Image (cartoon, rainbow, N blue to C red):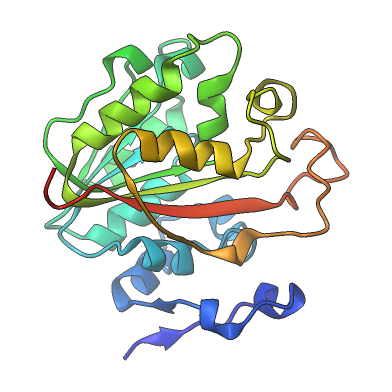
Length: 248
């Protein structure tokens, strides 16, 4: 039996219930996993992981990557969602960790046997097998930080495209900025113009399949840094789904 979740956020934002996602049993089970830290489960109400992974089409048996995994929130959910016949690759760039993952992240493979971690520089990004899906959350803007090469986002987009099987999905979530074709907002506000992000991902060959407005907040003026107490945890975020064409 499938559970249809109708998040309160949809009503609060005046959005049609047609945007609600049916959350498959495998993802429901993943969210109910007792191994998840309390700090993770407390974030579920705001992050809507069930609906988002349903939108991405995550299924048991898939090979999936969590690109720029941070503390492993999405990695842990994905590990249970793909099940024993699937596999998850948690990737955290060496540029963000000074070459060393923290203990909480290193414990993930011990808890979830079908998880492989990697901590290479962006320039060495690669996965050992073709993937069904790649999920990246609140990280695309980081590819435009001034300390990185100007072409890093194009390089990464191309590598993610190459990593996916034909028909594979790339799910991108990030903090929205106002129109910013020059990409100034990523470095100053840790946000990115959704239209600009979409354009550069499509340029790599991906086809845009749609968006999910669950994390939208029209009250966010897009002018404050995402860490500002006035907006932290309440930013307007976009959820974009892209697909690698089945025939190149």
